[in-house]
Each structure stands twice: as C-alpha cells, then as structure tokens.
Length: 182
Image (cartoon, rainbow, N blue to C red; front, side, top):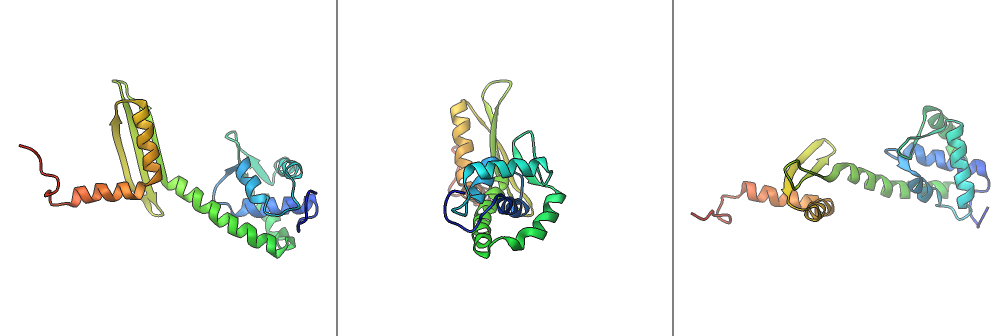
C-alpha cells in the first residue's frame, strides 16, 4: 500500500469499488472508477487495477465492449453486506465525489450534440436537451462546413439552456425586434 489512509488491504479496496459501483448512476469507464476510488491516500494504482480486474473475473462487475464497468446483482448484494466495514470518513468522501460525478453523468445524458455529413453536401447538426421528465428540445440545423458543425455542437454543449432560452424568446416575441424586410 502506498500512503497513509484508512484502506489497508485489497479486500477493502474491493469493498470500496463495489460501494462506488453500486452508487454511480450509469456504467462508467476505467478512469472514472479510478478517480472515485482514489479517495484514500493508502490506495495505489496497481492494487486498484488488480482489484478491479478481480471483481470482473468474479462477476461482481461487468466490463462492456465499450470499456464501461457496471455492477451486477451479485456485486450489489455483496456491496450491501460489506459497506459498513468501510471507514466512515472514506464513505463520506466517496459520497461527496459520487454526487459530483453523478451530476456530470446526468448532465452528459441530458445535453447531446452531434453532426453528420448530408448526402447533398454540408452537415446536419443535431442538438438535444432533456430534463428529468423527457425531451425539452430536439433541433437539427444545417452547417456548410465541418468546422462550423463542430463549433455549433460544442457551443450547444456548453450553454444549452441559454440557447434554448434565446430560441423561446424569438418564438414567443411579438415580432417587433425581428421585423422582416419587405
């Protein structure tokens, strides 16, 4: 074990990984599991990697073809049994880190933007915004060049609520600010 902390052996690292996997809202890649697990100074990368692989081998976790880890029913059962053996301070730190992680994951699933080439030239940029109840906006626009399509998608991901608000303002306005030239 590397430093000073509360986690003292590989079994406790496995308990910690299961604790995290049971609370993350969707399957996550290796680096997210690593970041969440490294909340204790005594855990090192190599022990973590070995424990994570062991949990997949013992079918407590699954590893998808996309490289995402998810907890199994067996993992959930064992996590519930073992979580009380984790030090309270470690669980508190994990819960704090998980709250941040879950907010980011939720946000990522609610704000989506992509683009693809059109058969006649140019690109179709699709921008989607959801909330907890469903779709708020699904907008498709054309961009003439790939760099423009990428820029539109990137800007939408950064401020989707602002863009949604501006669209609503234009659509709900009385037209005084947007007089057409005749």
